[in-house]
Length: 167
Ligand SMILES: [Zn+2]
Image (tube, rainbow, N blue to C red):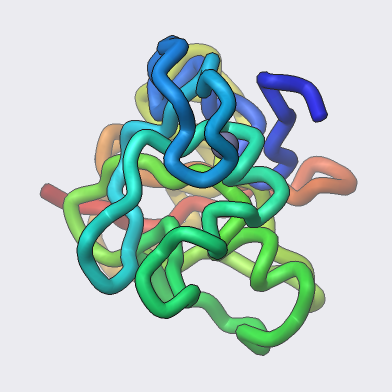
């Protein structure tokens, strides 16, 4: 496997700074990390560290977390947790810093991909993103600032969905 695997449900994970470059040995595979995950791992302590991007992508992290069960997001998810797509998002997709637990959007049984925050370039000028933030505001009954919106997009097609993360 490549040292820098692509995560389809968090395609800009490296640009979002959730990995640090280091040659420290990975706590799961023992090889130099190259890209070490710097976000929280939700599992029983102690947290294994460092963990490389490869072991996030292939699930080898599960071999070294206490009890074997873990997640990478503080989220809720409207999909059967035993489904392969749910496991891919929960355990094999790098997380990102949020203020609160958030809803990971699902459409027609398929999770959407996390693109970033509404204020990020180039999302801030994307009409689909702006429409998604406006739709969220209509649903919530108040205007949503771009910085308070997490932006997701369908893997196929151009469906954008915003969910709320207010500080
Ligand atoms: Zn590893």
